[in-house]
Amino acid sequence: MRSDMARLRCGKTIPLLGMGTYCPKKDQESTISAVHQAIKIGYRHFDTAKIYGSEEALGTALGQAISCGSVQREDIFVTSKLWSSDHHDPISALTQTLKTMGLEYLDSYLVHWPIKLKQGVSEPVPKEDEFEKDLGIEETWQGMERCLEMGLCRSIGVSNFSSKKIYDLLDFASVSPSVNQVEMHPLWRQSKLREVCEENKIHVSGYSPLGAPGNCWGSTAVIEHPVIKSIALRHNATPAQVALRWGMSKGASVIVKSFNGARMRENKRALEIKLDDQDLLLIDQLEEWKLMRGDFLVNQTTSPYKSIEQLWDNEI
Image (cartoon, rainbow, N blue to C red; front, side):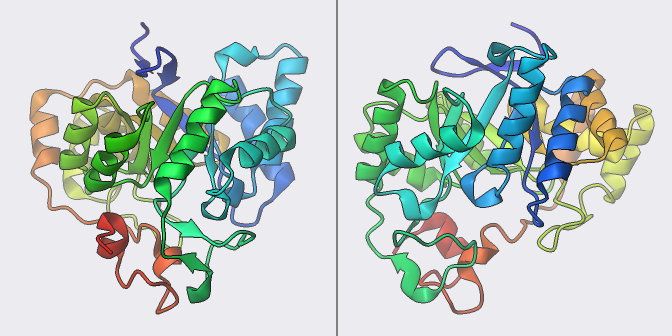
């Protein structure tokens, strides 16, 4: 197996470097153009979700690239996610996603959040009365397993699941998740969760691997950290490359979002960097912090989850 790939429990391989396609303005043309650039640069792993508003644009770009022979479908790894108001019927939700994207199957389909919203809720900032108290994750996972059986996807997984949620899922799952996509970067290293996932052969995929600089919920703290900068200087690399390579060194795939061609090339060169044991030790000793994971779900007082931690562990 190539060094820039990881093998999932289902046997399928996943590229370690992925391109995120979330676009707040839902600018279809910009997304299509960026995906074409990414394919030319060598990206083969693309991440989207219903709530991102980029499924159609990503599907259009991939369809165009496949049609003109720039890439073959089997060489592309595509992930999308089940939105929280569609937990009652994953099959219909995935069927619609495939129609929107013009694809016959997804390589990975994930439960986006371990929460359930009322049917029809399509805004990323739900109101208090739009949350369902009964998560019903067992029925949802049965629907995900059915998607796999029907050939609508090649693997199924979860996103934003804590260790506790993983254990809860494994108690009843007939098919264990292949992937858990979570926030992960040098200042939020997910050590316990990675250990749980490794023990259960669940691949960790990290979003916001650079700390999401430039986004309202993110920070430049990762790429501006003096330790990250010093490691980058020693390797003649950039802080972003060090942060990305750190995630890959832990066996995770990393989903980095940039529509800038130069940045996409810079990020891809992270695959060429080799961090040594001293580098990894220095990063493991950094003080941790976390982004506002799911802040849209605990916006002010509009959610039954009164804190990020409560959402993450979800003891209620």
